[in-house]
Image (tube, rainbow, N blue to C red; front, side, top):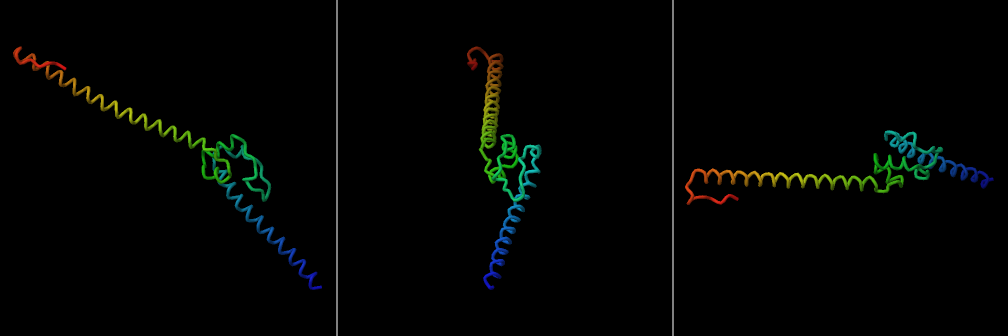
Length: 140
């Protein structure tokens, strides 16, 4: 009889462990669900998930993947959805902004140089108008 009494306790223990494990998984998935629901426009694109099923095991549509990756890159990485697409776009935009900034700085520098040369030409012309021919300056 002692073996019969141990068997239910082993079975009970396995059932309890399974239940605790499933509850842990479900609690984690509910946290992920809450984070996904914070992303605007994503709710209708999400696949349906059964109780105890992991988000990582589901297949997301291309639109859902893109929205998740764009709005929450760490979550997309955790779910295995990260393609790096939005990161590349962001890097390209950053490089573009840096190029625009450099061009603006160079343009301002050239404008300043042109202004200085124009002032020098005006000074030379004024000098030539107020001094005799032997003292003329070459206008650059």
